[in-house]
Length: 281
Ligand code: PAF
Image (cartoon, rainbow, N blue to C red; front, side, top):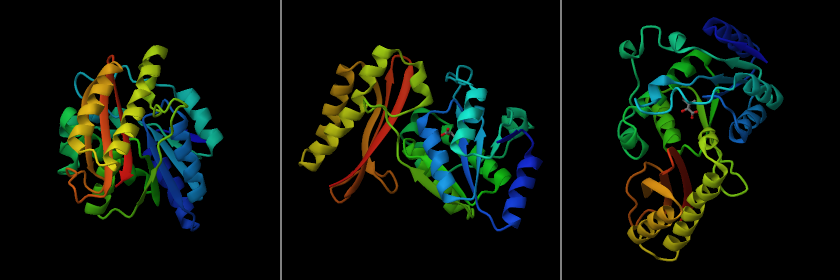
C-alpha cells in the first residue's frame, strides 16, 4: 500500500485506474482503526477494483472542549491493518494540507435540518466539519463509491443528503455496525474506557433492544424513552439524548411511521458514546 500526503499523487493514481475502466472505492477514517473500519475496507474490496483510504483527524468537526488532541493516532498499526485488508492507497494529509488558509477562511458545506439536531445540537458545528471534510476528500479522491459505518447513523444521513443535494457522482454505501461480544459498538473512543466502564457500556445496546421490543409490543415511545433513560442511568451512564425517530429523515416518530431508529448518545465517565438501532413496527 502506498501512503502519501500528496493530493496530486492521489489524483494521478485514481485517474490512471479510471483510464483503464477500473472502479475505485473510498473509505475515509480518522485512524486508530478497529474491526469496524476493517469491515468497511473488506466490503470496499468486494465492491470495487481498487480501495483508497484516508486517515485525517479533522479539527473542523471537533468542538473546543472535545478530544481533538487526545484522539488516538496509531499510523503504523493502521497502515498494517489497511494493507492486510486490501487497501492500495492511503491519504494522510495534515490540517495545513486540508485547510491551507486556516479553518476560519475555509469554504464549508452545511447540510440543513439533519445537521442541527441530536449530535448536531450537542456538538454545534460538528456536521459542518464532517460534510466539509468529506466533500473535500471526495473532490481529492474522486471515487466511484464511498463506504461509511451505520454506527454514525446521523453522519451517514448527512453525507447521503450532501451527495444528493450537490449532485455528486458517488454512490454512498452504509455498512452495519460491528460490535464486541458484549454488544458494545466498536469505536475508537472505546479505548478511553476502563474494563469496568466497557462492561457497563454494553447496557447501551441492551437498552435499545429492550426499547424496540417494548415499542413493537405497543408501549408508547415516550414511556419507552423514559424507561430507557432510567436503565442507562442505573448502569452508570449520563444520557445526552435518547430518541426514537423516522429512519428516512430523523423526523419525530409518529404513530404512522413504521421504519424507526432509536438513537442514543450517553457519557460513560468522560467518554461520549453513540449507538443506534433500526426496527420496524
Ligand atoms: O466517521 C469518521 O471517522 C469521520 O467523521 C469522517 C467520516 C472520516 C470524517 O472526518
